[in-house]
Length: 252
Image (cartoon, rainbow, N blue to C red; front, side, top):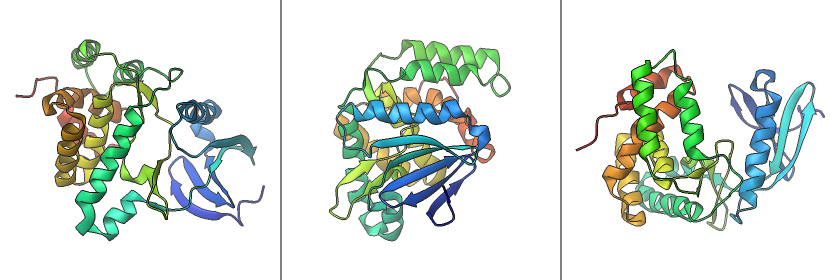
């Protein structure tokens, strides 16, 4: 396949994303690994089984020695770009964003990885970043958190929400999907907002807690766990911020 005539959408450190007619083609670098590409396809296929309205996986194929994932193309604009273009509508957009997340959390996908298992693996992989005591305390806190089986995205942020021309929204990029606790998922979203804009992070958390009838303190108990999970990505410019959150002292 010749990629030169495909419309380039975005370039990331480990993938390049193209539009190819009625499909999106995500071409991953060789060091991303074949298993990771097939796992992303499997995660998305299992989310499809939940009945949530998302783009369908079409195929996994090899292109010039690199693995690629083809997914249905959805016409529209990311919610992130709309927020940037229309800051006066921020609260409206954030309400829609939280409503979409809550509609996802009402779904189940029983064959997805357990959220707590994934968090535990990421915490235990931080041997060079966190000492044994901190890893133990984080895993102990994780063990005490309630076991739920809600569909969780794991990277739910406005760049992963597509707003169609008719105003309806769909969620993309399901590589980190798990089944687990909605507040654990919300903690990740909060931290992703807080990395860029604390005011938006606070607005998000207030709306999430209000609409889901969840105590703010409960979501905050997930923050150190979520921060450790994000640390495992190894993004250097985020490390200092996330380390401040990896603190198992209870919030007051």
